[in-house]
Image (cartoon, rainbow, N blue to C red; front, side, top):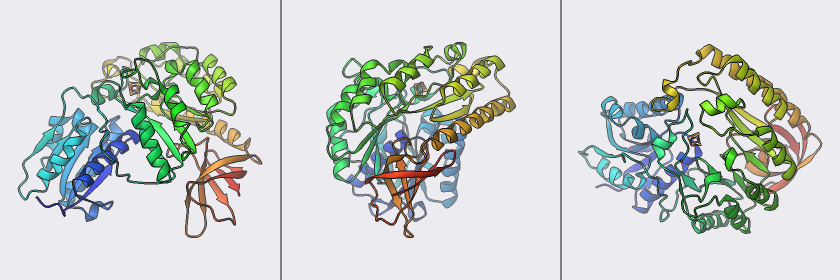
Length: 438
Ligand code: SF4
């Protein structure tokens, strides 16, 4: 087997998939394989795929076909082979290996096989996936910047009607607190300023290993790490956001006052049909805003879920108008095979789904611009993300999560260093981004 072959990885999908990609690269680097960031320069290309919705699948398939066209050896990993093992094998006979979502460690054997002159087809896809985080592996980070993701758990015990993730990733599995703290310390020592905690549902952290939700405890431990400046939590679940967690957000000074809480809808019947918690969202948001001063709230909604009447959509529209979320994303319902919602009657025509999404996003743009305008002439702490050769500086305030929210464009005569936190005076804005001076 030739270890001097170069391996590239193309990542698709969410930050959780990115961490898996980095873990696989770490395993390959440990085995002495050469990693390249340029897939044109590679001999073997791994495509780590996403299968959350149909559009994401199409993007992954496009990458796969590009690799096939290039004639390079192709390994397909992640959600797409987990979901469509046989169809993918039939459609892409050029793939030399396929690996499922929970078989990351098999990447080493897959690459060893692919590196042979006459490789045999290699396939490892668990029928019933259970995600165990490979704690002994050092992630090879694809992008090392001022901020870094840490996966605290994977899998999901919920059964939201539109979602295929629990079938692809298996039951909820948390990592031990001490391993997460160890990883955060190591990242801090490497110069990472902000850690971003991710999982399918971060608020469920610990239920499997500690028998009770333990995110508050984890935050308190991470808050003690000197080398980390900001701790951000993504993907929380409304009914799990209890008083203990609210107190931890309020009292841990390194935990940014930013709550990412996908609510998905406002109408009780829709929430019930989606198999989501039906609760008093208005009361919950009020409590969050009272207990965590200066909080930024991000949410997402799905429009056009089967059975969504005009009245239900109007309820959602009014809720968004009233709640004034700082950040909001709206998605058209996507009918995915093997989900509960797939076979529901009263599917909504594509045209209406699009209209509803556009209407909601237009409303949010207005709210978002008004909220951004309220920051003009205020000073906010921002993390320096990048400084270009001509001195242009891009930063991000605590109100913006990496990759999903906006940025702050800074004018300055000072020399700013990526990763540092600076106080920025805001001088202008548009719907999503801010402009400021140091
Ligand atoms: S909480 Fe719901 S939407 Fe999120 S991964 Fe679990 S089943 Fe899917």
